[in-house]
Image 1 (cartoon, rainbow, N blue to C red):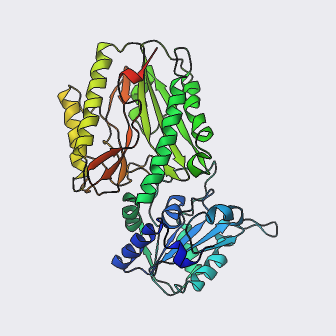
Image 2: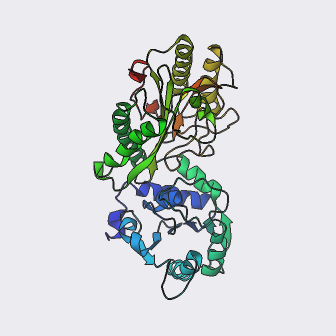
Image 3: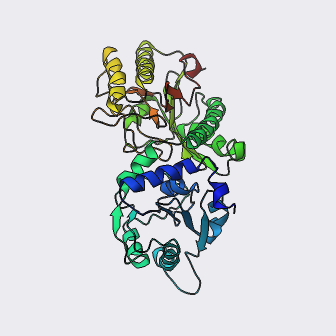
Length: 408
């Protein structure tokens, strides 16, 4: 492992500097994270199973405790120290929390924060899946900490972490750009498979497969994959709900075909939706497209540092209204934070009518104006956007015109 002075030259350590400043403001001496997204945020390492810990001190020391089979991945981050433990043993039956207590105790002791004020995750969390089976410690983390650092004052750090995750470093934005380049390639491949007579499930699979095939190995990416769903015809009107799902329904001429994708490259996530039309759009569909694209442009024009997130939502929503559609048809907010999160409506900044959050340079989020007409169909155009000093940087600039979205 490189010496600490050498590792400080890495761009990722801008993140450590921000964590140190946050700990200083909140009068905390250390920050312990277990959620994979926050382990990535604090150490540059994205856990697979969710049984890892990262610990950052106010002095900027970063240490990771990871399961033995994730040691290689853990060392790919910028932690000054990586220790491993065995979450499971043939010698005895034990929970992961029980297996981690003593190794974490030793790590906390070695960093000299065993009597210091430690911030930790306490509240509800939305965690994008890094593996088929995830282990989230949840309320157990308090029990583990009381064993590992019985003399340490403990403090919830959920707000601190949410604020840190909202504003990306330049290096993190670049890694999100990389994830967006991969999803762009996947959409180019998938679009060729959108055809009348194919099932929604088959179309969704055509978009998902390239996420890993194209992604792994590209620009040094170690892990790439994601999720894709297709909702066609009247099913596309249901895409405004809490989740998407693909069905066995076959695409028909005249259908709206909504494809939604959440993908990752080494833990950095995207949120992209495109709505195709099978054939020439009819007049009602044309009106919907015009409204959604106009709202999208209005939202992008409104984005710049210092603007309220609610103002971006209002810019999009007013355009939807002017085109004759109501909030009953634009059912959700205009966007939410993406990058460390995938589809969490609570990830900052929230482009919501009631949000008081202020946009800052480095924030990354989606912009997703939409119209859903029950029993008929829905159109959503969801892009990834980064806030720069000059305004909005569109990270997913592909298939962005009505002509590109027409199939057949």
